Length: 241
Image (cartoon, rainbow, N blue to C red):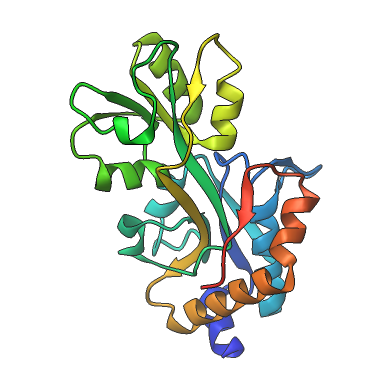
């Protein structure tokens, strides 16, 4: 299986790994030679080692941009959130780690629980085409999504337009809540973003190899070791598939 997977996943002799730079939990910095550093790049490097080939990082500013390039000879594997829209063209592994997504509301808001959010008249600021935005698109029925490009821009829109809700990953919201008095993060989560490894759907052997690799990485403690190495808070190892 490894030989066939290597042919599919590294046709150039190098595993080109698409990396989403906007997820600050999974990409925590840059190395001296400007390569991305973090849990996601470490997973890509480990997958390449399992295949017996070098890794080459292909960075993208957003997960949406990364997903758009599937099948266009830009990357061989992509490390982004696994969502139904993306899965139409990308074969995803089970998640290797999870991140809670929840809401933040302004001071004095009558919204006190996640159940209060999906109502008419409620406007939700969200980073467009993030994994949790895709979940909201599929599940919000009554509230209005205000989709903005980028995490910081979503926060600025929420504040400047006095929107009712800001959606985000809990670790990011924990930073945002310190920026203005009275902001409150709601208890619980509306979803957990499933961070996975994907490849083009045509790569059947490659997809099977990656699925097996991820399960072994979780079971062996490799994923937990990467999270600990980069001192990431708010990221947890996903359960077995």
